[in-house]
Length: 608
Image (spheres, rainbow, N blue to C red):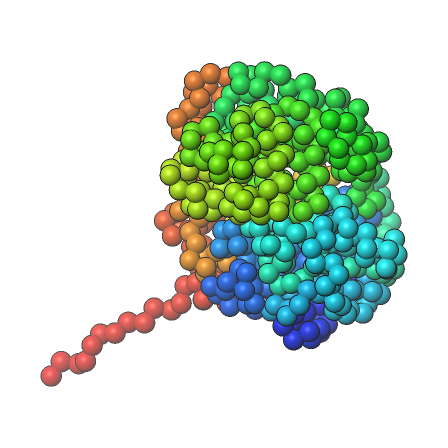
């Protein structure tokens, strides 16, 4: 087996309880790398088109990459993948922590689940062996309790990926949780896991990951760590101290963070951002930490709350959480955001979607679409952080109106009616990350990425040529923050060759990224989805433009961005089907034939 891979994946049929090992095809590794690259190829080949996302035919995968569990800095991530119940198309989400590396140390590059278990179960993967076990005693437990109970049974060298009650109750914004706060949050994959009655996966093992050129990998590691430590506002030193929360207060006023459900201006409507400042949140920190062997260690645990009675040991909120429960809700109360983060982590909710849904609910309340009678007396006003927390708890438990909100803004608006869709800010059903594409912080195709990636609304994705390296970073198991700081495709290629032993050029690596991106898109095409129809909420692109603040008069030229990128990718500008020759050039001739079958001509019967 080439370096970076354990060479095996597991297939678990939850309906029958049958588990089988499968050798990982080296050709698959060479062409699709890992993570959602290998994942999308396997699901495309093996899953029935039009499968119910919450039904037995959907396949849920947890997949590592070749850098996961290796010396490559920030190589600690795994990817969850399945058909998304939010969009009805391709779904993926990745997470850091310890679970990814330990899945490999347990002997496997990934595990895939089919069917639905007749009762709650968890999968134990222990030193190369796998067993389904009864999880009835875990069903109903929150994510923290589940981790603690399983780690107590299997030891501190075991690591757990699990769902909380939100996933059990099929909340479409449910996440898969690990390490008490690391979330594979997007695409609603916690609901897919819950639909399968799969409570958790436990990984325990000591098997080493083979690295082809250990000396080169170690040299590259040292060089990259030095590169990461260069001074700057988002340097590794700053991230270690403050995490991604280092940027929130400034972003809320610069126009980067969306404000008031994407309809406000930070400098005007949220003038006081003191509670969003990294230095203020730092005062709540008890201990710094990070993902497996990460030199940045940007995570932290907090002291016990004062005004909000959360316990010591909960996770510090990330920027996205501060943005969604802070600026989006006109809230700058630090402890309330800490509390909201804890509720989401315990119950297993995506904080981006959860905070956005609260902002949607506030705007509906302010406009009389929902009332105190609907909210059980909770006064949902902008900046009312007590009401925000109370509604988050209702959403997490699916109680009262929280039952409608638990599926995100699109479904909630459909259930509430009365014009609520006007305030439901999403793309393709997915709530959007906390970066405004009009500012240009995310690059020249920032608006296009929100609409045209196979998983819409994703601030960590790209679209067009800049997406190729992003797909490779995700597929290898790298953290985008750890690999960031201006590192480019050459360094990524050097890492790849050192770990795998392959002699890829930069062009080879980027071609793999393009191949992965194309197949994620083709998965959607097969499901009847053309991303051109995923029209973003007008507020996202500035229609109409704001009249004051940093983004006054700015509207994102999304149509131009999309048109240019489709041309570069050689995708049809109406159907978005990739050109047949392009697919052949990418090494997918069989998919080219499927997407472009030979035309049959009939000239009718001969005359006479």
